[in-house]
Figure 1: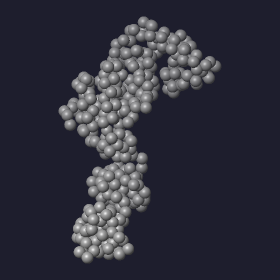
Figure 2: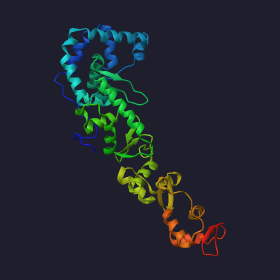
Figure 3: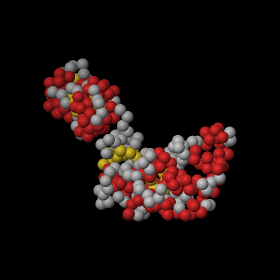
Figure 4: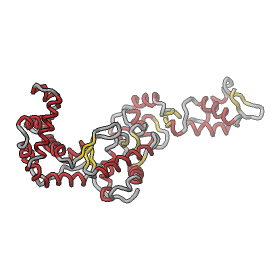
Length: 356
C-alpha cells in the first residue's frame, strides 16, 4: 500500500470542542428573526425544549397554514438572520466550523459530521441550524449513489465524487480487496486532491460516502452487491468462513468458524442445512463443502467420473482415481465401486474405462 498518514480508529470522529457556546449563539441569532419565523425555526430545527425536528407539514397542521406557507416563513426567518449584525459578528464561530470540516476531509457524510459536531441531539440540532445559515456550507442531497453530505470546497468535493464513481466502476462483483489494496486503487484517482487530506481516516470517510462500496466483517472491500461483501445471514457468514479458510471445510467446522470469526451463534444443523441449499457450496466429501467458484461442480462421485471420461476420453483406473480425487474427498474404494457399476461405465479390452 502507498505511504499514507496513519490515524487511529476506523473512520469514526470524536466530537469537537469549540471556543464558542453553541446554545448562546443560537439564542442570539434566533432573536434576529420575526416572532412567527422564530417559532417555525425552533420547531423545524428542534431548537427548543423538545429536540424533535418537525416537518413542514406537521408545523402547517399545528398552525393551520399550508406546507408551502411554512416553508416561506422559514426562508424569510433565515434571510432575516443572515442580514443581521449578529450573524456578521458570528463569522469567527462559523469559520471554526469550516476549519473543523476541513480537518475531517472537506466533504463528510451528514450523519458523521453531525455526530462529530455534537454529543447529543440538542447540540447536533444547533449545528444543523448553523450549517443551514451560512452559505459556506454546501449540502448535497442523498442520491442513488451517495449519502447526504456536507462540504466546504466544491472543487475538492467534485474530485471525490468522480474518484468514487471511477473506483466503483473498476470493481466487479468478484473483486474482494484488502483495505490497503482498495485505498491504493482509490488514490490512483485522487491525484488532483490536496495531499494533506490523504490519510487513512479521511480516505475511509470518503469511501463511506458511496452507497455502492463497502466492507464485510473481515475488513475486505468491494461492491456492496458482491456476495463476499453483502452479509445477510448464516449462508453469507459461511461463505466468508470457507473463502477465508481457502480449502473445503466440514460443516461443523464452518459453524465453529462463524462463531469464532463473527461472534454469531451458528448451530451445526442449521449451518449444514444452509450449505445444502446454497449453490455457492458443493459437497465434496462426507460433510466437506467447497466453493463453486473454486471450480467444483455439484454431483455425486458417479457424476464426476462420467464428466471426467466424457471430457478426457477412456482412461485407466489409476488415472480416473487421480482425476476424481481432485474434485472429491473420497476413498479410492468409493471411486472403484462406482466405476464398476456396469449400468454407467464399461471396461474396454485394453483395460481403460469409458462411460456407457
